[in-house]
Image (cartoon, rainbow, N blue to C red; front, side):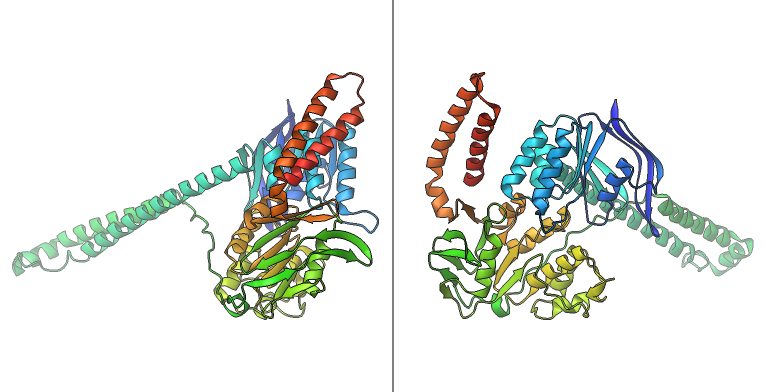
Length: 510
Protein backbone atom coordinates (compact mmCIF):
# COMPACT_ATOMS: atom_id res chain seq x y z
CA UNK A 1 0.00 0.00 0.00
CA UNK A 2 1.17 3.53 -0.68
CA UNK A 3 2.27 5.89 2.08
CA UNK A 4 1.34 9.10 0.24
CA UNK A 5 -0.68 9.79 -2.91
CA UNK A 6 -1.09 13.13 -4.71
CA UNK A 7 -3.84 13.38 -7.34
CA UNK A 8 -4.45 16.27 -9.78
CA UNK A 9 -2.45 18.69 -7.63
CA UNK A 10 -2.25 22.35 -8.56
CA UNK A 11 -0.65 24.95 -6.30
CA UNK A 12 -0.94 28.62 -7.25
CA UNK A 13 0.95 31.54 -5.77
CA UNK A 14 -0.37 35.08 -6.38
CA UNK A 15 -0.75 35.26 -10.16
CA UNK A 16 1.13 32.15 -11.24
CA UNK A 17 1.05 28.35 -10.98
CA UNK A 18 3.79 27.32 -8.56
CA UNK A 19 3.58 23.67 -9.60
CA UNK A 20 1.11 21.01 -10.71
CA UNK A 21 1.09 17.22 -11.09
CA UNK A 22 -1.44 14.69 -12.36
CA UNK A 23 -0.59 11.72 -10.15
CA UNK A 24 2.29 11.03 -7.76
CA UNK A 25 2.68 8.13 -5.37
CA UNK A 26 5.16 7.27 -2.61
CA UNK A 27 5.35 3.64 -1.53
CA UNK A 28 5.98 2.57 2.03
CA UNK A 29 9.68 2.56 2.98
CA UNK A 30 10.53 4.57 -0.14
CA UNK A 31 13.17 7.31 0.12
CA UNK A 32 12.43 10.49 -1.82
CA UNK A 33 14.75 13.47 -2.29
CA UNK A 34 13.06 16.67 -3.48
CA UNK A 35 15.22 19.10 -5.48
CA UNK A 36 14.72 22.23 -7.55
CA UNK A 37 15.71 25.87 -7.80
CA UNK A 38 14.90 28.25 -4.96
CA UNK A 39 11.34 29.52 -5.12
CA UNK A 40 9.98 26.50 -7.02
CA UNK A 41 7.90 25.31 -4.04
CA UNK A 42 9.87 22.47 -2.41
CA UNK A 43 9.11 23.47 1.20
CA UNK A 44 5.54 24.32 0.19
CA UNK A 45 5.06 20.77 -1.10
CA UNK A 46 6.15 19.34 2.27
CA UNK A 47 3.72 21.63 4.10
CA UNK A 48 0.90 20.53 1.78
CA UNK A 49 1.61 16.87 2.56
CA UNK A 50 1.55 17.41 6.34
CA UNK A 51 -1.63 19.48 6.10
CA UNK A 52 -0.12 22.81 7.11
CA UNK A 53 -0.95 24.32 3.71
CA UNK A 54 -4.43 23.54 2.35
CA UNK A 55 -4.59 26.24 -0.32
CA UNK A 56 -4.35 24.00 -3.39
CA UNK A 57 -6.50 22.08 -5.88
CA UNK A 58 -6.52 18.28 -5.92
CA UNK A 59 -6.23 15.61 -3.25
CA UNK A 60 -3.41 14.39 -1.01
CA UNK A 61 -3.74 11.12 0.91
CA UNK A 62 -1.33 9.95 3.59
CA UNK A 63 -1.37 6.68 5.51
CA UNK A 64 0.47 6.56 8.82
CA UNK A 65 1.84 9.00 11.36
CA UNK A 66 4.09 11.77 10.02
CA UNK A 67 6.96 13.50 11.81
CA UNK A 68 8.14 16.74 10.18
CA UNK A 69 11.32 18.69 10.97
CA UNK A 70 11.37 22.14 9.29
CA UNK A 71 14.44 24.07 8.21
CA UNK A 72 16.18 25.35 11.34
CA UNK A 73 17.35 28.88 12.02
CA UNK A 74 20.07 29.48 14.61
CA UNK A 75 19.18 30.85 18.06
CA UNK A 76 21.42 32.47 20.64
CA UNK A 77 21.29 29.49 23.01
CA UNK A 78 21.77 26.63 20.57
CA UNK A 79 23.35 26.45 17.09
CA UNK A 80 21.25 25.54 14.07
CA UNK A 81 23.18 22.28 13.74
CA UNK A 82 22.53 21.32 17.36
CA UNK A 83 18.84 22.11 16.98
CA UNK A 84 18.59 20.09 13.77
CA UNK A 85 20.28 17.00 15.21
CA UNK A 86 18.21 17.16 18.42
CA UNK A 87 14.89 17.47 16.58
CA UNK A 88 15.72 14.81 13.98
CA UNK A 89 16.88 12.36 16.65
CA UNK A 90 13.69 13.01 18.63
CA UNK A 91 11.58 12.47 15.50
CA UNK A 92 13.32 9.18 14.64
CA UNK A 93 12.99 7.88 18.20
CA UNK A 94 9.20 8.46 18.07
CA UNK A 95 9.09 5.78 15.30
CA UNK A 96 6.89 7.58 12.74
CA UNK A 97 5.61 5.83 9.62
CA UNK A 98 6.77 8.80 7.51
CA UNK A 99 9.69 11.12 8.31
CA UNK A 100 9.87 14.46 6.47
CA UNK A 101 12.86 16.83 6.68
CA UNK A 102 13.42 20.27 5.17
CA UNK A 103 17.12 21.03 4.44
CA UNK A 104 18.40 18.89 7.33
CA UNK A 105 22.12 19.51 6.61
CA UNK A 106 22.08 23.33 6.35
CA UNK A 107 23.96 23.89 9.62
CA UNK A 108 25.81 20.58 10.06
CA UNK A 109 29.56 20.04 10.09
CA UNK A 110 31.04 16.97 8.40
CA UNK A 111 31.00 14.87 11.57
CA UNK A 112 27.32 15.53 12.25
CA UNK A 113 26.45 15.09 8.57
CA UNK A 114 27.91 11.57 8.59
CA UNK A 115 26.16 10.80 11.87
CA UNK A 116 22.84 11.97 10.37
CA UNK A 117 23.37 9.74 7.32
CA UNK A 118 24.02 6.80 9.66
CA UNK A 119 20.77 7.47 11.57
CA UNK A 120 18.73 7.78 8.39
CA UNK A 121 20.21 4.63 6.84
CA UNK A 122 19.12 2.72 9.93
CA UNK A 123 15.63 4.27 9.73
CA UNK A 124 13.43 1.83 7.79
CA UNK A 125 10.15 3.71 7.26
CA UNK A 126 9.23 6.21 4.51
CA UNK A 127 11.67 9.12 4.20
CA UNK A 128 11.00 12.36 2.29
CA UNK A 129 13.35 15.33 2.43
CA UNK A 130 14.25 18.55 0.66
CA UNK A 131 17.99 19.09 0.27
CA UNK A 132 20.68 20.81 -1.78
CA UNK A 133 23.32 18.44 -0.37
CA UNK A 134 24.28 16.12 -3.22
CA UNK A 135 26.34 13.85 -0.96
CA UNK A 136 23.30 13.26 1.26
CA UNK A 137 21.07 12.64 -1.76
CA UNK A 138 23.52 10.11 -3.18
CA UNK A 139 23.82 8.27 0.11
CA UNK A 140 20.13 8.00 1.00
CA UNK A 141 17.52 8.24 -1.73
CA UNK A 142 16.13 5.79 -4.28
CA UNK A 143 13.99 8.37 -6.10
CA UNK A 144 14.35 12.06 -6.95
CA UNK A 145 11.44 14.47 -7.40
CA UNK A 146 12.44 17.61 -9.26
CA UNK A 147 10.23 20.71 -9.28
CA UNK A 148 11.09 22.62 -12.43
CA UNK A 149 9.15 25.44 -14.11
CA UNK A 150 5.79 24.50 -12.63
CA UNK A 151 6.01 20.71 -13.08
CA UNK A 152 7.08 17.84 -10.82
CA UNK A 153 9.28 15.26 -12.56
CA UNK A 154 10.21 11.89 -11.03
CA UNK A 155 13.48 10.01 -11.55
CA UNK A 156 14.57 6.60 -10.24
CA UNK A 157 17.85 6.32 -8.37
CA UNK A 158 20.04 8.71 -6.39
CA UNK A 159 21.27 12.18 -7.35
CA UNK A 160 24.01 10.97 -9.70
CA UNK A 161 21.47 8.76 -11.51
CA UNK A 162 19.13 11.76 -11.74
CA UNK A 163 21.92 13.88 -13.27
CA UNK A 164 22.73 11.18 -15.83
CA UNK A 165 19.07 10.89 -16.85
CA UNK A 166 18.69 14.68 -17.04
CA UNK A 167 21.74 14.98 -19.28
CA UNK A 168 20.35 12.23 -21.54
CA UNK A 169 16.97 13.99 -21.57
CA UNK A 170 18.69 17.28 -22.47
CA UNK A 171 20.55 15.68 -25.39
CA UNK A 172 17.31 14.11 -26.62
CA UNK A 173 15.67 17.52 -26.34
CA UNK A 174 18.44 19.07 -28.46
CA UNK A 175 17.98 16.40 -31.16
CA UNK A 176 14.17 16.76 -31.10
CA UNK A 177 14.37 20.57 -31.26
CA UNK A 178 16.90 20.46 -34.10
CA UNK A 179 14.63 18.10 -36.08
CA UNK A 180 11.59 20.29 -35.31
CA UNK A 181 13.39 23.40 -36.58
CA UNK A 182 14.61 21.54 -39.69
CA UNK A 183 11.06 20.44 -40.50
CA UNK A 184 9.69 23.95 -40.02
CA UNK A 185 12.34 25.46 -42.30
CA UNK A 186 11.71 22.79 -44.93
CA UNK A 187 7.94 23.41 -44.94
CA UNK A 188 8.35 27.21 -44.84
CA UNK A 189 10.77 27.08 -47.77
CA UNK A 190 8.42 24.91 -49.82
CA UNK A 191 5.41 27.10 -48.97
CA UNK A 192 7.35 30.20 -50.04
CA UNK A 193 8.38 28.49 -53.28
CA UNK A 194 4.76 27.65 -54.07
CA UNK A 195 3.53 31.18 -53.30
CA UNK A 196 6.20 32.57 -55.63
CA UNK A 197 5.27 30.06 -58.33
CA UNK A 198 1.59 30.95 -57.98
CA UNK A 199 2.39 34.59 -58.69
CA UNK A 200 4.08 33.67 -61.98
CA UNK A 201 1.12 31.91 -63.64
CA UNK A 202 -0.39 35.15 -65.00
CA UNK A 203 2.90 36.20 -66.62
CA UNK A 204 3.23 35.36 -70.29
CA UNK A 205 5.74 32.59 -70.91
CA UNK A 206 8.27 32.92 -73.77
CA UNK A 207 7.04 29.73 -75.43
CA UNK A 208 3.36 30.86 -75.38
CA UNK A 209 2.10 33.10 -78.14
CA UNK A 210 0.30 36.33 -77.32
CA UNK A 211 -2.97 35.06 -78.80
CA UNK A 212 -2.82 31.79 -76.81
CA UNK A 213 -1.96 33.73 -73.65
CA UNK A 214 -5.01 36.00 -74.13
CA UNK A 215 -7.31 33.03 -74.76
CA UNK A 216 -6.11 31.20 -71.65
CA UNK A 217 -6.38 34.34 -69.55
CA UNK A 218 -9.98 34.99 -70.68
CA UNK A 219 -10.79 31.36 -69.96
CA UNK A 220 -9.49 31.74 -66.37
CA UNK A 221 -6.92 28.99 -66.77
CA UNK A 222 -4.15 30.94 -65.08
CA UNK A 223 -6.44 32.04 -62.25
CA UNK A 224 -7.25 28.40 -61.50
CA UNK A 225 -3.57 27.40 -61.54
CA UNK A 226 -2.65 30.33 -59.29
CA UNK A 227 -5.39 29.47 -56.80
CA UNK A 228 -4.43 25.80 -56.74
CA UNK A 229 -0.77 26.56 -56.10
CA UNK A 230 -1.61 29.19 -53.44
CA UNK A 231 -3.97 26.71 -51.77
CA UNK A 232 -1.23 24.06 -51.60
CA UNK A 233 1.13 26.66 -50.09
CA UNK A 234 -1.44 27.53 -47.42
CA UNK A 235 -1.91 23.82 -46.70
CA UNK A 236 1.81 23.65 -45.91
CA UNK A 237 1.44 26.61 -43.54
CA UNK A 238 -1.34 24.74 -41.73
CA UNK A 239 0.93 21.69 -41.46
CA UNK A 240 3.54 23.86 -39.73
CA UNK A 241 0.98 25.01 -37.16
CA UNK A 242 -0.11 21.41 -36.50
CA UNK A 243 3.43 20.19 -35.80
CA UNK A 244 3.93 19.16 -32.16
CA UNK A 245 5.74 22.09 -30.57
CA UNK A 246 9.20 21.29 -29.19
CA UNK A 247 10.67 23.67 -26.60
CA UNK A 248 14.16 24.99 -27.22
CA UNK A 249 16.69 23.38 -24.83
CA UNK A 250 17.99 25.61 -22.05
CA UNK A 251 21.56 26.60 -22.87
CA UNK A 252 24.18 26.76 -20.12
CA UNK A 253 25.81 30.13 -19.63
CA UNK A 254 29.52 30.27 -20.27
CA UNK A 255 32.20 32.94 -19.92
CA UNK A 256 35.85 33.47 -19.07
CA UNK A 257 37.07 35.72 -16.24
CA UNK A 258 39.05 38.65 -17.56
CA UNK A 259 42.50 38.69 -15.91
CA UNK A 260 42.57 42.39 -15.10
CA UNK A 261 43.49 44.45 -12.05
CA UNK A 262 44.51 42.24 -9.14
CA UNK A 263 43.87 39.14 -11.23
CA UNK A 264 47.08 39.94 -13.10
CA UNK A 265 49.79 37.62 -11.82
CA UNK A 266 51.65 40.42 -10.07
CA UNK A 267 52.73 38.12 -7.25
CA UNK A 268 53.30 34.38 -7.09
CA UNK A 269 53.08 34.12 -3.28
CA UNK A 270 50.11 35.96 -1.76
CA UNK A 271 50.43 34.74 1.85
CA UNK A 272 53.09 32.81 3.74
CA UNK A 273 52.20 32.48 7.45
CA UNK A 274 54.66 31.41 10.11
CA UNK A 275 53.77 28.42 12.26
CA UNK A 276 51.59 29.69 15.10
CA UNK A 277 48.56 29.45 17.36
CA UNK A 278 45.11 30.94 16.83
CA UNK A 279 43.19 32.62 19.65
CA UNK A 280 39.77 34.24 19.78
CA UNK A 281 39.29 36.71 22.65
CA UNK A 282 42.11 34.97 24.59
CA UNK A 283 40.52 31.55 24.02
CA UNK A 284 42.89 29.05 22.37
CA UNK A 285 41.41 27.51 19.22
CA UNK A 286 44.15 25.58 17.41
CA UNK A 287 47.78 25.55 16.30
CA UNK A 288 48.67 25.73 12.63
CA UNK A 289 51.73 24.79 10.54
CA UNK A 290 53.42 27.15 8.04
CA UNK A 291 50.56 28.17 5.74
CA UNK A 292 51.33 29.31 2.19
CA UNK A 293 48.95 30.49 -0.52
CA UNK A 294 50.26 31.07 -4.04
CA UNK A 295 48.35 32.67 -6.91
CA UNK A 296 45.77 30.21 -8.29
CA UNK A 297 45.70 27.91 -5.23
CA UNK A 298 42.29 26.46 -4.26
CA UNK A 299 42.28 25.42 -0.58
CA UNK A 300 39.57 24.13 1.76
CA UNK A 301 39.44 24.09 5.56
CA UNK A 302 37.03 21.73 7.28
CA UNK A 303 36.41 20.61 10.83
CA UNK A 304 33.78 20.54 13.59
CA UNK A 305 31.51 23.51 14.27
CA UNK A 306 33.16 26.13 16.53
CA UNK A 307 36.64 24.70 15.85
CA UNK A 308 37.85 28.11 14.63
CA UNK A 309 37.45 28.00 10.85
CA UNK A 310 35.72 31.40 10.62
CA UNK A 311 38.16 32.93 13.12
CA UNK A 312 41.09 31.77 10.96
CA UNK A 313 39.62 33.38 7.83
CA UNK A 314 38.99 36.65 9.68
CA UNK A 315 42.56 36.65 11.04
CA UNK A 316 43.85 36.28 7.47
CA UNK A 317 41.54 39.09 6.36
CA UNK A 318 42.81 41.42 9.10
CA UNK A 319 46.42 40.23 8.53
CA UNK A 320 46.96 39.78 12.28
CA UNK A 321 48.73 36.41 11.96
CA UNK A 322 52.52 36.61 11.73
CA UNK A 323 54.06 36.03 8.33
CA UNK A 324 54.35 37.46 4.82
CA UNK A 325 51.51 39.25 3.01
CA UNK A 326 52.10 40.38 -0.58
CA UNK A 327 51.85 44.12 -1.27
CA UNK A 328 49.61 43.14 -4.21
CA UNK A 329 47.24 41.12 -1.98
CA UNK A 330 43.59 42.14 -2.30
CA UNK A 331 41.13 39.97 -0.36
CA UNK A 332 37.44 39.44 -1.04
CA UNK A 333 35.68 38.04 2.04
CA UNK A 334 32.28 36.35 1.94
CA UNK A 335 30.37 35.44 5.10
CA UNK A 336 26.68 34.98 5.91
CA UNK A 337 26.91 37.82 8.44
CA UNK A 338 29.27 40.17 6.61
CA UNK A 339 27.27 42.90 4.89
CA UNK A 340 28.96 44.28 1.77
CA UNK A 341 25.85 45.66 0.06
CA UNK A 342 24.59 49.22 -0.42
CA UNK A 343 20.84 48.68 -0.07
CA UNK A 344 20.04 52.02 -1.73
CA UNK A 345 21.85 50.99 -4.92
CA UNK A 346 20.56 48.63 -7.61
CA UNK A 347 21.61 44.99 -7.71
CA UNK A 348 23.65 45.68 -10.83
CA UNK A 349 25.45 48.73 -9.40
CA UNK A 350 26.29 46.84 -6.21
CA UNK A 351 28.24 44.34 -8.30
CA UNK A 352 29.46 46.75 -11.01
CA UNK A 353 31.21 49.00 -8.47
CA UNK A 354 34.58 47.51 -7.67
CA UNK A 355 34.49 45.01 -10.55
CA UNK A 356 36.71 45.12 -13.61
CA UNK A 357 34.88 42.26 -15.31
CA UNK A 358 32.80 42.80 -18.45
CA UNK A 359 29.04 43.37 -18.41
CA UNK A 360 28.68 39.99 -20.11
CA UNK A 361 30.41 38.17 -17.23
CA UNK A 362 28.59 40.20 -14.55
CA UNK A 363 25.14 39.60 -16.02
CA UNK A 364 25.83 35.89 -16.56
CA UNK A 365 26.81 35.37 -12.94
CA UNK A 366 23.87 37.43 -11.67
CA UNK A 367 21.50 35.41 -13.86
CA UNK A 368 22.89 32.10 -12.62
CA UNK A 369 22.29 33.30 -9.05
CA UNK A 370 18.64 34.00 -9.85
CA UNK A 371 18.87 37.69 -10.85
CA UNK A 372 17.85 38.16 -14.48
CA UNK A 373 17.66 41.41 -16.46
CA UNK A 374 14.15 42.08 -15.17
CA UNK A 375 15.33 42.62 -11.59
CA UNK A 376 18.99 43.67 -11.66
CA UNK A 377 18.12 47.38 -11.83
CA UNK A 378 15.88 47.24 -8.74
CA UNK A 379 17.24 48.48 -5.42
CA UNK A 380 18.86 45.88 -3.19
CA UNK A 381 16.59 46.83 -0.26
CA UNK A 382 13.72 44.83 -1.84
CA UNK A 383 15.64 41.55 -1.55
CA UNK A 384 14.95 38.82 1.01
CA UNK A 385 17.68 37.66 3.38
CA UNK A 386 18.65 34.72 1.16
CA UNK A 387 18.70 36.92 -1.95
CA UNK A 388 21.00 39.43 -0.22
CA UNK A 389 23.40 36.61 0.62
CA UNK A 390 23.45 35.51 -3.03
CA UNK A 391 24.03 39.08 -4.24
CA UNK A 392 26.85 39.52 -1.70
CA UNK A 393 28.46 36.38 -3.07
CA UNK A 394 28.25 37.74 -6.63
CA UNK A 395 29.81 41.03 -5.50
CA UNK A 396 32.76 39.27 -3.84
CA UNK A 397 33.29 36.83 -6.72
CA UNK A 398 33.31 39.62 -9.32
CA UNK A 399 35.31 42.13 -7.29
CA UNK A 400 38.87 43.27 -8.03
CA UNK A 401 40.47 40.64 -5.77
CA UNK A 402 43.14 37.96 -6.11
CA UNK A 403 42.24 35.97 -2.96
CA UNK A 404 38.69 34.96 -2.02
CA UNK A 405 37.87 33.87 1.52
CA UNK A 406 34.54 32.03 1.28
CA UNK A 407 32.84 31.13 4.58
CA UNK A 408 29.94 28.70 4.02
CA UNK A 409 28.86 30.14 0.65
CA UNK A 410 26.54 27.21 -0.18
CA UNK A 411 23.75 28.06 2.29
CA UNK A 412 20.73 29.59 0.52
CA UNK A 413 21.90 28.17 -2.83
CA UNK A 414 19.94 25.52 -4.75
CA UNK A 415 21.76 22.69 -6.52
CA UNK A 416 21.64 24.23 -10.00
CA UNK A 417 23.19 27.43 -8.64
CA UNK A 418 25.78 25.44 -6.68
CA UNK A 419 26.88 23.66 -9.83
CA UNK A 420 27.16 26.98 -11.69
CA UNK A 421 29.23 28.45 -8.83
CA UNK A 422 31.50 25.40 -8.92
CA UNK A 423 32.32 26.21 -12.52
CA UNK A 424 33.04 29.85 -11.66
CA UNK A 425 35.43 28.95 -8.85
CA UNK A 426 37.24 26.39 -11.03
CA UNK A 427 37.69 29.05 -13.74
CA UNK A 428 38.60 31.80 -11.28
CA UNK A 429 42.25 32.74 -11.99
CA UNK A 430 43.01 33.89 -8.43
CA UNK A 431 43.22 31.98 -5.15
CA UNK A 432 40.43 30.65 -2.94
CA UNK A 433 40.29 29.55 0.70
CA UNK A 434 36.95 27.80 1.24
CA UNK A 435 35.10 26.79 4.40
CA UNK A 436 32.08 24.62 3.61
CA UNK A 437 30.18 21.67 5.05
CA UNK A 438 29.14 20.64 1.51
CA UNK A 439 31.59 17.83 0.70
CA UNK A 440 30.63 17.62 -2.98
CA UNK A 441 31.19 21.36 -3.38
CA UNK A 442 34.56 21.17 -1.60
CA UNK A 443 35.79 18.29 -3.77
CA UNK A 444 34.63 20.02 -6.97
CA UNK A 445 36.26 23.41 -6.28
CA UNK A 446 39.45 22.84 -4.25
CA UNK A 447 42.49 20.57 -4.47
CA UNK A 448 44.29 21.19 -1.15
CA UNK A 449 42.33 20.09 1.91
CA UNK A 450 43.15 21.18 5.47
CA UNK A 451 41.35 19.74 8.49
CA UNK A 452 41.06 20.95 12.10
CA UNK A 453 41.25 18.09 14.58
CA UNK A 454 42.36 17.85 18.19
CA UNK A 455 43.35 21.52 18.36
CA UNK A 456 45.53 21.33 15.23
CA UNK A 457 45.18 22.50 11.64
CA UNK A 458 46.37 19.46 9.70
CA UNK A 459 47.96 20.17 6.32
CA UNK A 460 47.53 17.98 3.22
CA UNK A 461 51.20 16.91 3.58
CA UNK A 462 50.67 15.87 7.21
CA UNK A 463 47.52 13.95 6.38
CA UNK A 464 49.24 12.12 3.53
CA UNK A 465 52.18 11.15 5.74
CA UNK A 466 49.84 9.85 8.42
CA UNK A 467 47.58 7.96 6.01
CA UNK A 468 49.28 4.58 6.64
CA UNK A 469 49.10 5.09 10.41
CA UNK A 470 45.39 5.88 10.17
CA UNK A 471 44.77 2.76 8.08
CA UNK A 472 46.52 0.65 10.71
CA UNK A 473 44.44 2.25 13.48
CA UNK A 474 41.28 1.56 11.49
CA UNK A 475 42.20 -2.11 11.08
CA UNK A 476 42.84 -2.41 14.81
CA UNK A 477 39.58 -0.70 15.76
CA UNK A 478 37.61 -2.82 13.27
CA UNK A 479 39.13 -5.95 14.82
CA UNK A 480 38.14 -4.73 18.29
CA UNK A 481 34.62 -3.98 17.06
CA UNK A 482 34.21 -7.46 15.53
CA UNK A 483 35.39 -9.04 18.80
CA UNK A 484 32.98 -6.92 20.89
CA UNK A 485 29.99 -7.73 18.66
CA UNK A 486 30.64 -11.45 19.17
CA UNK A 487 30.46 -11.07 22.97
CA UNK A 488 26.85 -10.94 24.29
CA UNK A 489 27.96 -9.35 27.56
CA UNK A 490 29.34 -6.22 25.85
CA UNK A 491 27.44 -2.99 26.48
CA UNK A 492 25.83 -1.32 23.46
CA UNK A 493 27.33 2.06 24.37
CA UNK A 494 30.86 0.58 24.33
CA UNK A 495 30.24 -0.79 20.84
CA UNK A 496 28.92 2.58 19.67
CA UNK A 497 31.98 4.34 21.09
CA UNK A 498 34.26 2.17 18.92
CA UNK A 499 32.00 2.84 15.92
CA UNK A 500 32.30 6.59 16.54
CA UNK A 501 36.10 6.34 16.67
CA UNK A 502 36.15 4.44 13.36
CA UNK A 503 33.86 6.99 11.75
CA UNK A 504 35.96 9.92 12.98
CA UNK A 505 39.18 8.38 11.66
CA UNK A 506 37.60 7.74 8.28
CA UNK A 507 36.34 11.32 8.06
CA UNK A 508 39.77 12.72 8.95
CA UNK A 509 41.45 10.49 6.37
CA UNK A 510 39.04 11.40 3.57
